[in-house]
Length: 111
Image 1: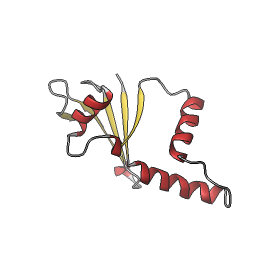
Image 2: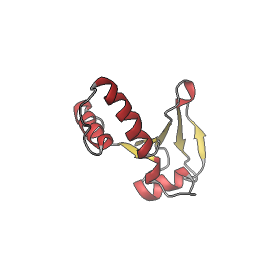
Image 3: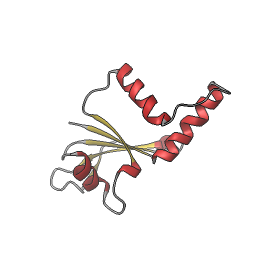
Image 4: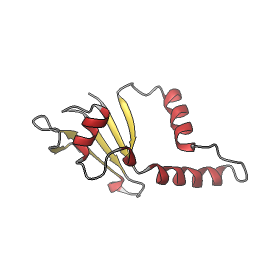
């Protein structure tokens, strides 16, 4: 089964990553599209499984249930795991659930 990491919008990811890199590498210019550059390099180095997908929230259509949107846009299927990630800190920074087996839009907690 696939795992979909539903991330904050790209603008938030870019800003968070830019803030970290600016502290670690002050004065150095950041690459264009920092988020894609970093995730490509980290994914290759970490040898992530082929069935792991990083999906910024703004890649999904507005107003559609998350499960249905992942199914339509990325081929998610019942039983696939969704990890909704927030930039907030603490235990509520991520929520994990499985796409329902009867209906893609039905959710079952998978904590």
